[in-house]
Image 1: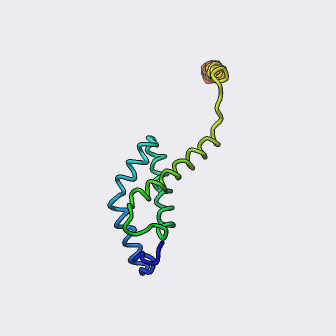
Image 2: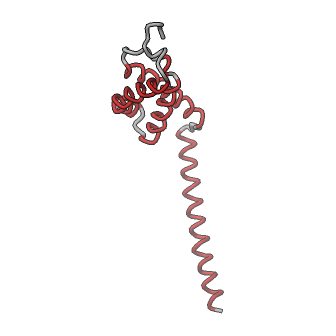
Image 3: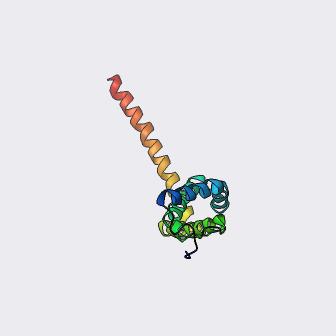
Length: 130
């Protein structure tokens, strides 16, 4: 911030009020931006929360009188990129042959479990009759 920035020497309550006012005015636009890049609403909510947290911590870096939504969207963009980077680390990507093998294997396993349940039920029925 520059020395002429009125927020630099503002009392904490005034700074908090200014942040909340600017955020309230722009919340819909910011969330719309995040949703446009992350259509999963649950992920978008997490990204929005992380974005607002960063905005709150870095609000002293915001220069009063500049475009608040542009500043917020820049933070959101980096938050989304970070989120996607974390998502990629947590996923294992299989090629189509492996996926087909797993699908066939799981079908056979389900059929086997079904037959055990049915046969087990028959055995229990016969035991109950005795």
